Length: 219
Image (cartoon, rainbow, N blue to C red; front, side):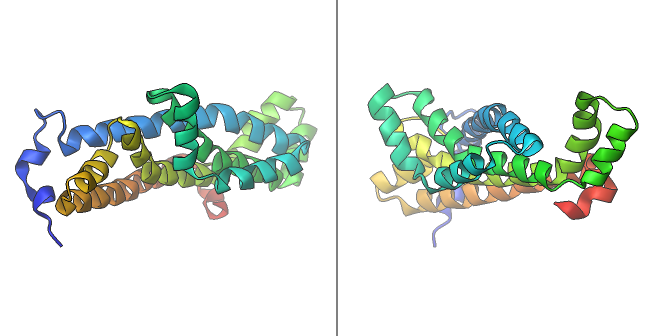
């Protein structure tokens, strides 16, 4: 294996727009936007279905169907319909992150200890207080596990953005293959894998900090 591209200081130069640090920033930008839209769309739906039990069949099957969609194929379809640009990439990546967020929100709410919820209601808490002070904190370990799963998937898959002319770490893979520069391809694969591990470790730290110690065994 040839690590020359990865170890060349010129490819880490912050003054170079095509350097690895710049590609990492754009890659994380696509990741963050996809996760943001995924949370906005899937989290309220998953919480509602888990809280009420209505539409659970639809939620589970929609999650399974979402996982089976090929992201690159969906991206090409979106490019055909919408043209080149950031929007097709965001749609394809958002569809990728919706299933784990949706199903974890549903599972987190459905697996609550209902004796605790009933006790909160018995103490006179209103529905909104039960949701925000009891149900959501108890479901948080499962919710965060689903979010970490979604983050890992989108970090690994955001390389497809380069296939339609955008930036990100996929540039190292696409451009390297185009000129048979396998050192560049190897650098791209290593940096993507390392970035996925670092993102997961960061989210694990966040989870450790915000989840109540008594609930950590539920994730």
